[in-house]
Amino acid sequence: MLLLVCVLTTSASSCNKDVRLREESCQDFLKRKVSSLPFDELIRRGSKCLSADDEALLNRAQTVVLVRGAGDETVEQLLTDQRSLEAQAEKFDLPQISPTSKNETTPPNTDLINPNVQRSPVFIYAAESDGTVNKNKPIATGFFVGIPATGNRLLRVFVTARHVINRAWADCPDKNPAQIYLRFNLKQDDPASKQSGVAYERLDAGSFYQPDDNDVDVAVSIVSQSMMPYLDKYDVAPIWLSLFATDDELQSLKIGDQVYTSGLVPSSAGVRKNNVSFTFATVSSLNDERLSSFCAPGADPKFVQVWGLTPNLNEGRSGSPIFRTRNRKLNGELHSGPVLVGIQSMATKDGGFSGMTKSNDLYKTIRAATKTIAGLDFNRGFP
Image 1: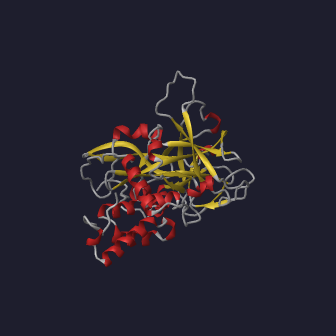
Image 2: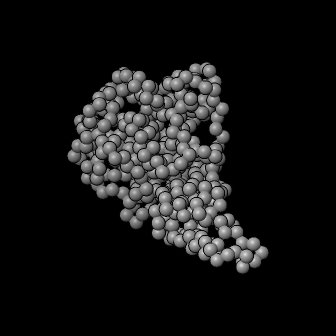
Image 3: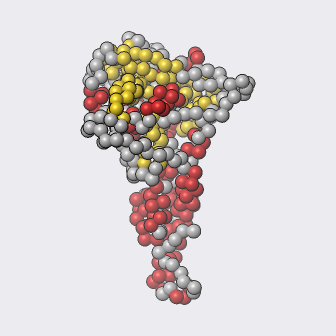
């Protein structure tokens, strides 16, 4: 039950007139539609009516409203839903990491790095005109990023290339999709079974945040808490924000360095399971100027801010995470493992090499998309 500032004793008459009016005002507040006021104003009014616990609950519910919209629900319904969601919310334990120097970063668990890199990609499929999934049309790759939050919780965002969900931005000849489908591997799967080991989940293309910088080929969608229990069914692992390259690590990248990406090859996506394919490439350009890219043969060029990779990577890898192997300190010892340095963009106009959007641009986009959510740890490593 929600706790109001006006607490009634054994008899309603024990409250004076001012207190009764105050209690009635709070009741009106609870019945108010969430969409009727800016969320900041709801929080301000809630501070006068709600207990400290419910006031904090209302603040945390802002994430859900940001993702799915306010709809017709009341403040009371929103708080009830939020309480239920948090009871189911995914939990995790923050790792115990020894202090390192200012510019060194560490992954949360070296034993899980390589399997997580292989489990992080999700295949993106097109939707039919009636909104159902087209299981014969894999189009791109995406992945989840995990951001630690206060209270031992994890916020996840889904990441892909901007041109996958905004074709007009990339000057592509086809229309923007209204929705896309994510294809997951199931956790519980019998390889000997003839049944499918994958499942499809719809994601509205309009849920993606796109950066203000028109040259950046990145889009992110915040995963609502209501989706988290469903993700538990799937064999997918987020890439922790701590695995993003630091500024120093990104600046140390040189022409000729080896990188690798895990993602989709449309011709061999897999029938029963997502067949994640690794491809290795060489950094061939670190140009700060925009490069002419294209989203499909015959399309007009689109100038984007990317670094170049050779050989040219296949089209279905758009949105794939790109890693570089680096040494980082964990408990005072050096460990070798992947560091996220970018996300695959479009190929150049002549097909000479593929574009890589820098992980710094993805990092800035995630921060902008989640700026209204309190309690997030954006550290790309451990102090």
